[in-house]
Length: 253
Picture 1 (tube, rainbow, N blue to C red):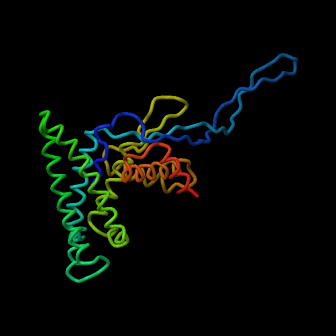
Picture 2 (cartoon, rainbow, N blue to C red; picture 1 turned 90 degrees about the vertical axis):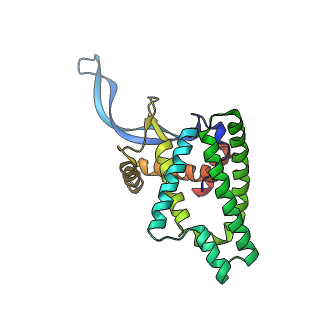
Picture 3 (cartoon, rainbow, N blue to C red; picture 1 turned 135 degrees about the horizontal axis):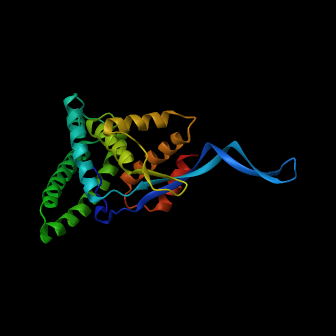
C-alpha cells in the first residue's frame, strides 16, 4: 500500500540534493621558467577532487500511478510464492491470539479493508477526466493519508513480523523502483543524467547493487544516501528538505 500524500503537488523539483567529491586523474597546467628563463606551460597528471551533485527528483503524478501498478505486480508475485499478506497475518493473530488483542485485530482488518476500498475508488476516479472525479480524487488522497497514519500506529507493535509479509516485500521493491526512477546526477555543472543505468528495471537494479557494494567508490555513498532519502520521503511525503537533512545526519551517526 502506497502513500498518496500531496501527490497533486508533485512536480519536477527536487525532494533532496547533495554533493559528493569524486577523485579523478586530470591533466593540470602549471607555469614554470625554462632553462632559458622564459616562462613555459607544463602538463602533468594529478589526482584532483571534483564536485558531483546528486538529485532525488519529485515524482510526477504519472510516475506515482506507475508505482501503484508496479506495487500490485510485486505483491501478486509474492503471494504466488506463498508469502502471506498483512491481512492474512492479522486474521491469524485474531483467530489464535498474538501481539494484538481481538479488538485491535478486528480494527486493523477493518482499516485495511477501508484502505483497499479507498484506493480502488481513487484508481477509478483517476481514469475519469471530469471536474467531479478530480475533486473526489483530491478528497480520497487526504482520506488515504489519514487512514495510513492510523494504520501505522496500529501496526507499530508488529513491524518485526510484518517485514516478512508479501506487502512488505512489495513495498521494498517499490522503494528500489523509486530510487532508480528519481536519482539523477550532474558533474561540473553539466546536464543532469540518470544515475542508475540499464535498459530495464532488472538491469538498473543490478547497477544499483553494484554501485552500493563497491565501498571504495563514492558511488556507494551516493547510492546509500539516495535510498535513505527515498525511504524517508516515501513514509513522510509532507516532510520538507530540512527534515530530510536532519534525518540523514542523524541516520549517519
